[in-house]
Image (cartoon, rainbow over all chains, first blue to last red):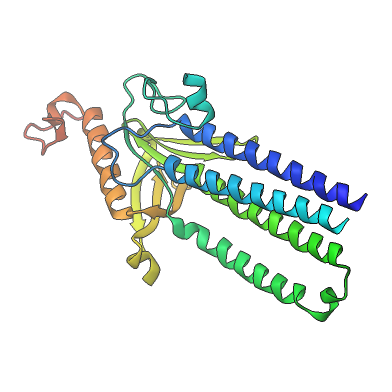
Length: 73
Length: 203
């Protein structure tokens, strides 16, 4: 039972991560930097990198944890 | 194709508006997120929390637990930490300021269910100030931008603004244009207010 709850937590975690990344990037994509705005870089590009990193880390953590949970069963 | 681009979070080059709610003839002069130093207090707190957790997980109390429970607690903690850090990073990217030729806009969006926009029209701005305090603000070139409203009580503060002196200059330049456009025609010269050569009739 505990193991299945653990697995469910990680599956929800991956879903949450994907939804949060998609939501943040979609929100940011509505604002576009015009060519003359060269003073500071607007956050869309950096947010993309954070999003990619976020999804990869959470996905790897989930896979590793689920595999280890079944190993302990 | 457009939907796919939007799903991936890419900007649409065909879109005419620079931001939602853009008015006709409105031009974006400046748009920026805030300085990354804004995240430092949060990261320091997280570092302290992680160090404390590592010390706790390596203590003799935790070593006595069953391997599955031990692994589960570490796994849940690390997953939650990654979520909190990335969520905070997204919140950081979704808060930004924008200066257009009509107004100053403070946008505070959130990942879920939060869309806030505060607008300060140029005509309501009485005065602007910029300040840099401390060694870090000088080294990393950030500071506070303070906008005083037409009423003395109204004060808008933007903390951790990138290259604050440059942004202060841009804002003053736009304000000068707005003031000169609002002057009577006799006091304008090439869009900039000039010294009155003819006395303005009283009343």
